[in-house]
Image (cartoon, one colour):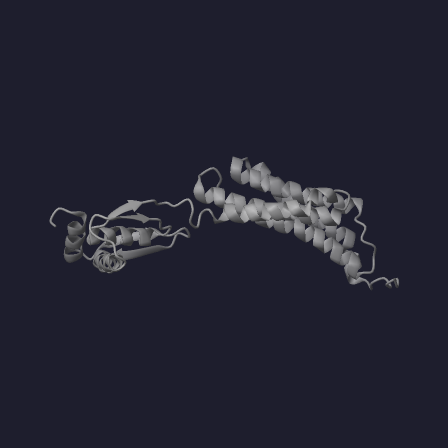
Length: 247
């Protein structure tokens, strides 16, 4: 019918080689010509009709992908079906981070990591796991809102989750594999806290837009934690292990 959205689309397909450009979350652009869009929309219309939808029926469009949404929207129009857009969906794709974070919160609570305060080799792992949960939560918040920048979750994962987990595991490995008791020195305990401070500073720099001092301080603290590790355990790694005491 002349003057309708579908008629305008068909007219554009006949008179121009242009189309619509879609940009995904990674910044990759894909252009679909109006001619191709008409073909895809008409195929979608046929599929909707084959599913039993009739002229005047309503169909909810819950599609996280922009291209799929547009194609299905026009397909519904071609089929005479009333499209009811529910885009962007809060329950598909974007909500996955919240669901993942919730699952890990339950697991962390079951482990009761707060009871390991006297054991540095354990609480560093639990603290690293907390950062893992924070990573999922930050990613979900970044996807659903503009409260935090998209890169915030990356720093929570790299400096927080990996940083704390690595320093704790590396300490345990070097002590265990060189035949030494699993006792953490005061210097290494300080290194754990320094690594935690580095992660917090880097995250604060991203979220609160602190000055460059925070970025520099985070980098120096991160480096200092591993310098302490090397100073404390580097020699152990190049020397023969102590003889194991039979149990």
